[in-house]
Length: 350
Image 1 (spheres, rainbow, N blue to C red):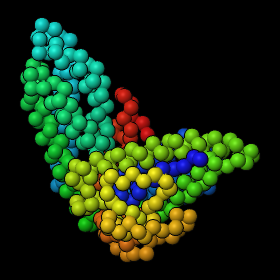
Image 2: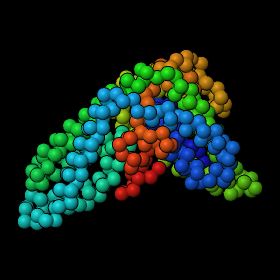
Image 3: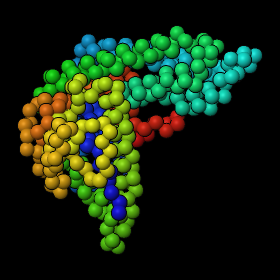
Image 4: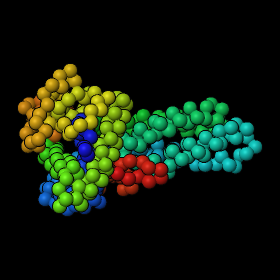
């Protein structure tokens, strides 16, 4: 049985869910819509997604945007400077302290933290840099850091990254408070289309009809890719929550089924409709077989669910990039991929 894993994408904030839908569109295009039985659904999908992109990736010109850009430039430059210093371990063979950490620098740090890190989406870069700071302290120790002369840069990198995260969260709150409700409507429409995609591809992946054998094979491969996208979305959501930028900061999604506990890892069928947003009351799931049925609660503009449930969590559009459909989260750096990218060595792909 080929199944699509469950992750309540309603938990994602505006930028995250838009990035997810962008990467899903790329995956469908790569697999070819006709082979997946999705030719008809992709026209409204593309049109609605572009409207969501235009709504979410809009620069507010707020003071927090300026603070974000300033901190991002500083952390990118500092990361590059530290990484360049790590690349120079071969030129100091006579220094015992450097020789002691040479192998871990070359085989672990440089391989894991590639030159592509500054090009990652904002939130993913934030999480990666936190890991980088931790690994430098853990793998090198005080002696190795002192021998490489990166102590000051390491402190500057940590400060810049923390400043960026704080400004990002403050801008998310600002945007959540100014939400007009249009984003909510578009998210509901996108979720209904997403459910159609899930139901069609999962049905075809498990069909025994020989006439649809080619589609079955294509859908089976597509489901594997979709499950990777869902796992990545879940991972980055959990990272955001653990960093203290969850629903209480205006980032989360209200009105969807199930708990908002970041440890939620149920994997059966898509479950983003209806239900309470209160973790203590996850007992109001909707009918997953009908994507047009919304939850029974309020659709107040502060309720940013995909289906209009009863939760009341705000949904912040946190990206500030262009409206070209690429999902870039940084107007100053066109090389940043859409939210939802997966780091694979030196490459970034969905």
